[in-house]
Length: 265
Image (cartoon, rainbow, N blue to C red; front, top):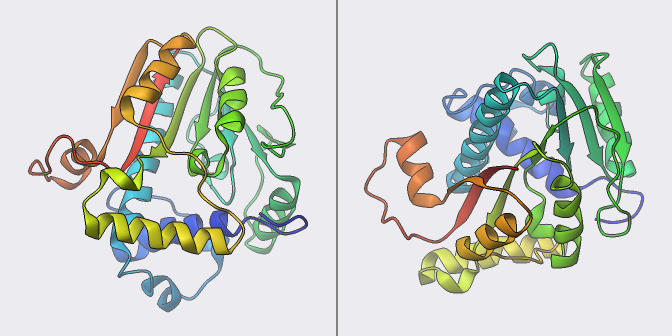
């Protein structure tokens, strides 16, 4: 992202989440604040209808992650850290009264978000705090009271491998920590039509200064997590996401694409 400007991909992801509330009436995950924080006409959100693949992936990854957060709270986790929070609204509709939320993002994006919250008359709960970090230039540091859940959606592909590793090291620094994040497999693994679509999207985000830098294969990410002490790992690729959230058991198990995973240390 450009210095002094908020993240454009954060805006794009927020529009997909809001569009899901309008087009699919929030059938995968419900977010009553998604449209409100954007303050856009519904007609503009409907313009995203042709890009259903990305919209539904973002809806599914959000549902997966928020279900994992609920399970973690049930196990006693009382700290949630949202890495690259963008316009995510979980902190402002948090259904867990004892869960403290720390939003971590670039200071420029945080300033922009807080203005949008004020403009949309969305209140900031007392159990929400903010930490400004540039993941590629600064080390992540957050004071936590006990094990934490790290919500890390829509960020990993934009990091260098070094930036990813350094942030993951902090996440893995305490026993009991959990993390949910998404990652992309290499376009070279995909059929020509899907590869071309992914490359076009990669070209679009590169033009706005936020290129995709890192891809992983499932075996690689599994080995990386286990080497850092994570033992309970659930990784859903296109076939598993299609079966769980869209009633589609017909997608071949090894279909490459976007993944979302949850890991516990």
